[in-house]
Image (cartoon, rainbow, N blue to C red; front, side, top):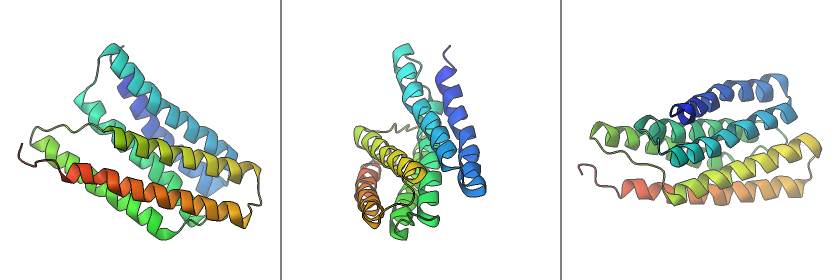
Length: 179
């Protein structure tokens, strides 16, 4: 039972190639949305179960945020490179660079015996990213063709989320590297 949260995290990672295949190879946006929602729900469920059963592990502290990053970046790649959204490229770059830097910092901290779990701001960042992705994919799946206003609104939403993503990353830069 104590391995279920980690199994859910691994399952989320395994759903990412399926999501990417559905979006990029098949163009099946509604199916990709269902896979994304299922993967996002495992994020909530694994955290809830880990806290409930008090089985928070070092693996989960590292793998869970990594799975979130990979899932979000996969969806943002589709929203950035595929029509109808074609999000502004700096949004993807800011979010991807922040996630890369934080992942590297987490590894540095881990090697020094410091495990840095996601904080509240990081959890909000992930929630708002996933909410925006679900809404964007739902509109893409069922409101095609999208209005210019909706595409503009998506760019504004993800621009604000990119700013929050960058800001939330500052917490990791404040951590003492040797402590």
